[in-house]
Image 1 (tube, rainbow, N blue to C red):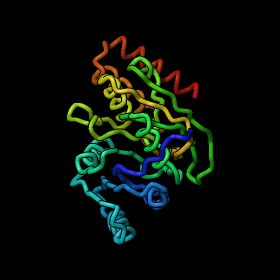
Image 2 (image 1 turned 180 degrees about the vertical axis):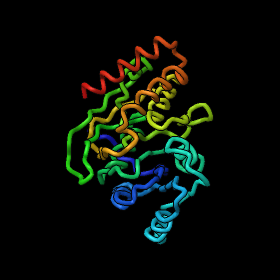
Image 3 (image 1 turned 120 degrees about the vertical axis):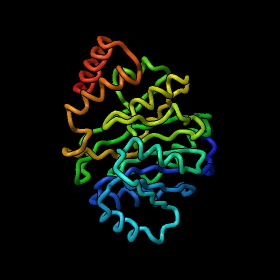
Length: 253
């Protein structure tokens, strides 16, 4: 017997925006084209230069599902997502970066999976694409039941995540990091004994760009140490050990 299909529950889709004009239309259109249409898009404009803001407002002025919120100053992607969640009206919250793409069935398949299995957090497998959309590889999702399952390797694609808004509170939000801010949030969610459930279907495409913050090795190492030492409150030596583990697992991918 096939799982019962569910087509209800508002999804609030959070997109932080900073200088991604080349890709944002493809990203937004991949959302607007979803087979599941009960959603709102909250785009947090995080650039003090307003030229792209006028472009976005003009491009989407007739689209009622899109709400654009401008930050008074640049606060980073993590805090921008927090601000977006504060505005979110949905039962579910989904994340996508401003240069990534969703498959047409992403929301329908994943929301059905969550509702049918009474889940509060899910993520999926995803493909890696380059700046031109060429597929470079794939990452496979898996279940995480406790902190120890995830702490040595951040194996969750942010643009694949959907969670129930009810699990977000003042202590469970994105921290002030330039990279790996999502890693901290996933670990905090596991600390609350909330399971991170995997749907092994490729429903998203993550765009790998050489000039992005996520490609900076030095920044990654600095932020990795902060994850363990400041946010997980591990000892200095233990934090260094986990940074080494994280780096090794990254190189294995």
